[in-house]
Length: 359
Ligand code: AN7
Image (cartoon, rainbow, N blue to C red; front, top):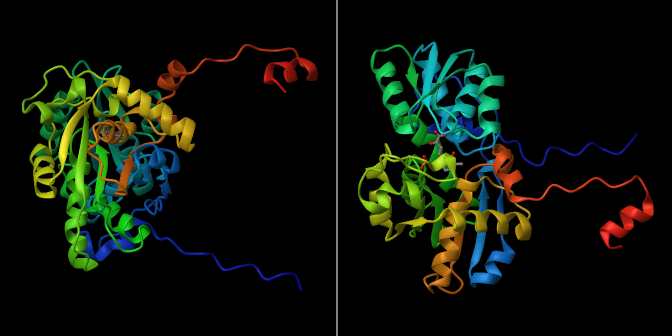
């Protein structure tokens, strides 16, 4: 007899089955799942040492389609199936469309996607197309696209799966449950994350709020939201007609969950502030080069804000900080190619290679 095959260490059944009691789905809703969720909470010792706090990265880029959207999409698509819907629609800066397309393929539903032409990172567009979505690029921005799909959904033609669909928020709130479990039964002191359409900050805050009852914990984090300086309507207190930023995921001028973000900020004693593209890219590079974690530019915005506030002396010593990294770095190959220098070719010779390596 050979050695015994070990039991699986844990059986993860995905967001819908794990949290079904708390998601507001009809009891007979099927679970459409790609086993999303259960993403790692990765310690960030280098950033921690730099700012004198206990920093962890909730790497949502480890979800099946490479972003946090899967956490809410699985619930929204499960709900759409339960309701007898035949088609999904969404507007997107990229990740929502990738996720919607994948879950639609899984569920056997049609998926229509409306995007701002030329403003979607290549990896995300490729995902939407390979999963079989019908993609319509428009000569407008995300906010225009959202207006169009809201209109389609209102006509009853398809289920809207942007985060204005409450089931998206229900699914995304589960990130807070996982963080509390992964921190050993406590909430962080501070939770940093990027803010675009503002569904995610709304959802995370809802999760922490529910967790006070679910887990009997009495502390919720301060929510620190980061908007890109060229797309910072909540910071400025007014719509931005022509949002601009290299962080295309959060190039949004009129967030649908604006009020949810303001409520999360105020109820948590937190803040929503702007970071420049240069600050976003510095955090993006720092995460990759010192922590070994490669996220997409928008995902680095929360860390950029953390670094900025640490610089200003606004991060209490020893604070437990969680930063959500919302999407994987491979989503946006064009950006990373602009940030690196591609190496010249060398002859296939050991000595030449050794010399180039400085070995
Ligand atoms: C990587 O895909 O809005 O504040 O249409 O892709 O909940 O909008 C994406 C948003 C942060 C902002 N990080 O989250 C879309 C879309 C990444 C993102 C955000 C997005 P919200």
